[in-house]
Image 1: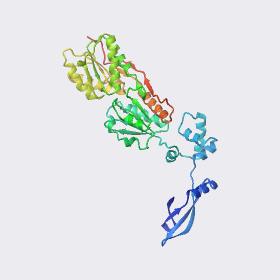
Image 2 (image 1 turned 60 degrees about the vertical axis):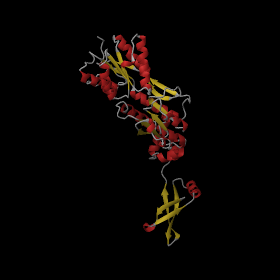
Image 3 (image 1 turned 45 degrees about the vertical axis):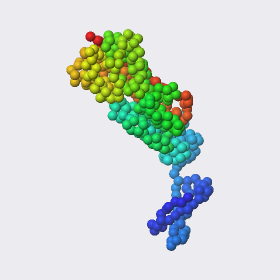
Image 4 (image 1 turned 90 degrees about the horizontal axis):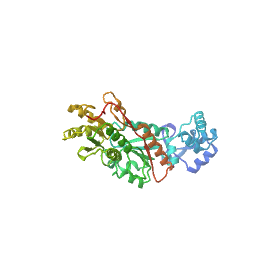
Length: 386
């Protein structure tokens, strides 16, 4: 091993020492080791000086002061829940007394862990995602992980090497589709991952999701109770579990109430404003236009509200509009959107905790699907059918 060091008079010297010598030196001097400085003059080396380099405080020093093992120090400073609160506080006090700062590089080398998690989002223009990314970041941070946001137009555009170059410990898939090949690639390479909001619909998924089918049922029952019989649906893409499950729950509950949903009153598309804005005019031009529209999410519903305003259609007097997700903007006075609510922050927190458990191999290999409940939120965009 060779180190380049600056010698006397500003010249560059080459310090040569063996790993065995350093090990021996550390045994006798836990705080410092000697480096023999050799200066090159006219092609030959001559000894010119000896310097003592101070070694920083290590986690072993903190462990000795706190009276615990070195691995316990590492876990305590990461707020690992396996370490008791009292022990974590004792370790923090010892670290503070010694002015100890954990080395991320050293931690990575000693544990083969980077403490970094990648989050893949393919649609940052959708107002839904900022409301789940922020709490995801906060929860991962509290668990001792840094978040790296990876944005591409689709899962297929995410270069495999970005995720599998050993720079991350795990991945959160926030915009996955049912036909994406990325989960299988991650599985083959042994990269832990979880789904957030969407999954593949398989029983062995690791996912934090919403009771989409149950939410769709809530909307259908409310519309049936209000007397609506000409009902339309503007759902998400068929290759998303959120789109399929919300449509399924809606259809099943409508059928139970004796209300049909013909394909002529169904539109499927991206979960974005333009989908709702462009779909409504065609639905209104039908021989029997709908009296109510259930939208795949709040963003689509806001597109419908603006299209209705442009067409001179009154909401809710002429048309009932219902969304899904209850984004903060849904409650704004300008919209006052009737919608389906679930806990956006808990959705993200669940995903973060599940991924960390999967990284630590503390999960059932058969999969784990965490499902948040939904509730109907009545505001100002629904009314009885006329």
